[in-house]
Image (cartoon, rainbow, N blue to C red):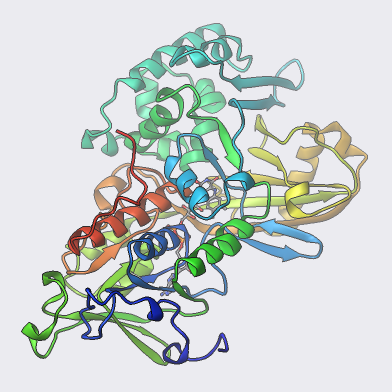
Length: 498
Ligand SMILES: Cc1cc2nc3c(=O)[nH]c(=O)nc-3n(C[C@H](O)[C@H](O)[C@H](O)COP(=O)(O)OP(=O)(O)OC[C@H]3O[C@@H](n4cnc5c(N)ncnc54)[C@H](O)[C@@H]3O)c2cc1C
């Protein structure tokens, strides 16, 4: 069957495997049906989880690929990621996801946290420090690294230690934390501007996509507590050694196909509506669905279903939500977004020997060697990940080139003699939701007021900032809520360790 055939004419791989003991609420014999809207990590996770529980699942994605905000594209001989993505060992849901789609080996974790931090503004010339952990228990695992971190004075290091312990005592369930900004709290803990720049923002900007002054204390505390204080290895870093698309598109699609999910790309959903049943008692489905079913509309097609998971960003969710489905849906529009810029440079030779490093005293934030992952066989390809990039996201390429190439020459002496074969940028203006103070109160849970309608996406109330981990957790939460309402166990789902 052609890929562009209307949905109604396409073979449904799940159709042959109906369970005669069950019935969907649209009156057809067979399993309960679910439509997942959005093929980012949240939607893929929901679709897999629901299919694994035995539902007939259709996944609808507007773009020609899966993976949402974490994808790859081809540029000449390079496979380019739209943005460098990393995860931490504490991201257990994302690791569950990698395992579920057979991709664990493609995005390995460091054996032990080790982040080289190069300060190029140091008075005595460029200086390299390391943020490393030992095998000691929390919080001693970072003590050695902190006491030798050269980018802070002795007094600043002592105060950082005290602030870290105070952070560990914060109660993450206290909603008051979300209303405060992280910078004010750090200032109250005696943190200097330098300590914020050289340590708290070094980590916080990359994980929260905001500087401390613009970040909710609740989200910041969650990141630092979970990443640095929950277990010795929690902050060990992992990242894809292949193009992100190999994982989030190719392998995810393979897993979805194997699970019997019907995946439709280039299929943008235009409306989601609840249709009351004409003869209520006639359905043999469970009580959840007795008084209606859902109709999901895509161009030229209407799909009837029992369950809908809206796994799209907040603005799209707001546009698709039927009225009355959530209290104050306009609050979704008050969840702002924040940009990430990636600067890509291809050199004719190797200029960097490390897999990555972080930078102080320069507009450059984090530099990753993407040579092997991109398929490049000679020369070197570096990706600079620039978070909280509000000031630069719309700057012309020529201006960014004039700024970043000389900076790279300062950081990497070998770059001074190298020829730049290619320079380009990728701009993600809505890379993440903005983790501003107060955002927690705006993020919705998976359940809505409408029976059978669920929300997923990194922007929903996961407790995490906008991350792959948050996206996967939200997808699991939506699937779990749907299965619970259907009276089905969700034992196969990712479960957070107690
Ligand atoms: C440059 C960049 C760097 C990042 N770095 C990191 C990192 O290092 N670590 C990390 O953990 N996270 C990182 N993130 C964040 C992470 O990528 C996202 O939080 C996560 O991918 C969001 O997944 P999602 O499924 O919630 O949403 P999305 O990825 O936004 O997926 C939503 C999907 O819905 C589709 N859609 C929308 N409307 C419709 C419709 N009407 N019909 C059908 N489909 C529709 C969209 O096309 C999209 O594919 C980064 C993001 C960016 C952009």
